[in-house]
Length: 198
Length: 198
DNA sequence: AACCATTTGCTGTATAAGCAACAAATGGCC
DNA sequence: GGCCATTTGTTGCTTATACAGCAAATGGTT
Image 1 (cartoon, chains in turn purple, orange, green, yellow):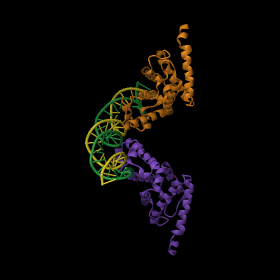
Image 2 (tube, helix red, strand yellow; image 1 turned 180 degrees about the vertical axis):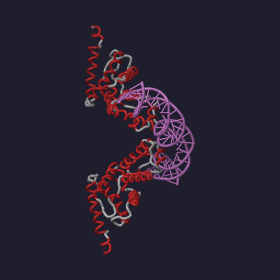
Image 3 (cartoon, rainbow over the protein chains, first blue to last red; image 1 turned 135 degrees about the vertical axis):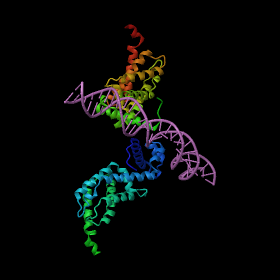
Image 4 (tube, rainbow over the protein chains, first blue to last red; image 1 turned 45 degrees about the horizontal axis):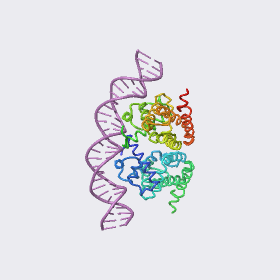
């Protein structure tokens, strides 16, 4: 599972990934055979099995590396700090993430819409949550555990919505809207006072 | 030297060829190193040497297969027949050839202009001539040996001119103009009568 | 000339990819 | 049900590619 540097592996995986994504568009995920992938990627069928168990495994791995790329581009600890939410840092971070997404829009759109109910969206959310667990400080402005469960869902929903709108909106706009949401949440829904009053 | 079917070889050669052609545009043929080719083609340098001696050999081989493709698309015996020149058949044939050329215009432009004087143009002419020798009937409307030496040069000049003009002109137009040239040649320049009168 | 970095051929070894073959499974279709 | 084509995993074997290392050649600079 370590990172690959062998040129052959890189090129084979590139070919498989692009072939797979274009086949999803052409005939839909369920109708794709390993033969299709091999032919389109111009590789031998047995080569596919060197890397993946089946097309579900392929999708799972692609989702994993896809999320890894997004995660590598973000640093939530910079704006979900101890007592405040820093909008400027968040805007930058979201911009980085969207750049990663824009690089492979078809992949992320498929993951987030998960039209075949393969648990990709959940997998993506788990990956994000895991990263938050590792990088967020113990004390956050909002109840930490709540944050860990909400933020991934919000992030992915935003990205999905952004993709559904053909990546029209700027990260600045999105970040600003989300900032309002986060601030609202910390005031009226999650602040200790209002919580006590329920 | 037999035809390759191994997917690895096909992909490696594809990568080398496209890398090479784009490098020619970028930095000029003479400045290209094998390292450049390997890096751009995303192959190991030693892999290059499995297929080619050096960049000159690469160019020679590319010229050879390039000419083979053109030759495979043409059948001069269909219009340079015993007593006549058949313009319709020639038009079709030229159209086929130009389609092959249009597929890799950078390659053929470089071969035919041969800016580094590597004898590519000559190699191309020789290949064409060899094909004519093999397929033209013994008796032609014009002196056969003369035909063998003129036609390749004319063909290649036309293709070069067509490429220089960004492939604007139709094969029909070119074929018609050439037909006039061929007919003129056979009447006033090469007919036995005028020849005798010199 | 002397120096230096780059390129060049060429080596050995490791390994991914190709390929053919096979039985088992899948999935229409009559 | 039975038939047939396709797909699927998996196998053993071959081969092209990767990769690191090397000495020699090259080419530019001072």
